[in-house]
Image (cartoon, rainbow, N blue to C red):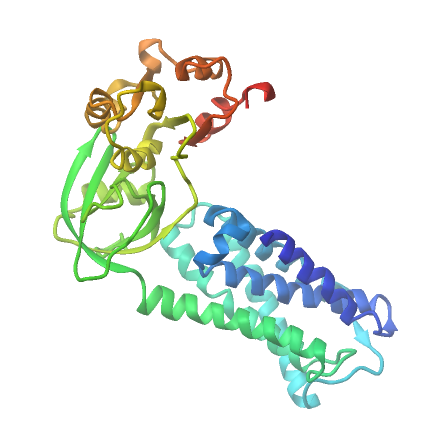
Length: 401
């Protein structure tokens, strides 16, 4: 529904310019300029991480995918607009000529600034914390472009229905930009917590957080949150799955050392540090009452299943327990293995550990047999882990699904 709404808003806007007359492809030139505005507005709106929008796009990860594509296509549309240079005959000016001329000059500045900021985004070696600062500046060329669009000549008046249509989108995009930068990244950055303990769990670091006040992060098993550690060089937000069960008074995160930030985190004096938690987000649902459940985890992808395991009671009937297939390269890299083995001993889950170095590497054809079935029809399957887990372990014949 979400991506279709983005496309529909762009397609519908074409009809605002069909009556435009002038040299060359004036209607197309005006339309692609408006498309650039619309797509940037969508990009800023999606960056707000509004929870009620998650079901429309299929989760926050897909919202961000649309956010990136909308921003990229907005730059392409802006380039086409400036290339076509539409000059309308008999159009309606949105403001005095002096204001319109000044706005057009600002639009030229916006174009250069946007190209620079996009180039920075494409340079992979720019550290994330610096990239975030430059990314926030994208709102400046957007505001310049909106002012140019508002004041320029168009085939309709700003007070008409089409004027209100585009006006609402521009105001919404500008408000989303200001809210994200000023409020979301400034005033309301998350629920304050303190680190009460840290533990090395296999190749990862387990961090336990205690709320500072009465505010709590109420999550479901399988959801994630963005955390900001209030220590030098650790303040940028990073998303991690919440590994604690929903009724646990503390929040628990298990963080693998996969990048510069997480490596610095493992070396930092964390106990007592303040952490801001923004969430929860996500629509990952490991459990499905009344259906056989299969969990496939790889490496640090075990975290949502740790949260789900904490909610389970002992079940004498093994067929009614979730079956956890946990794939790791080496046994000492299995996160919270003792905790999982205890849950299996208590009859809360069925555990199937696969260690590549021990010759028990998991292959897709084994999954149905592990669950004790001929195929996986009717089985609720949840997968979390790196790409090889997601793409290799579920490359099953369609008859099995």
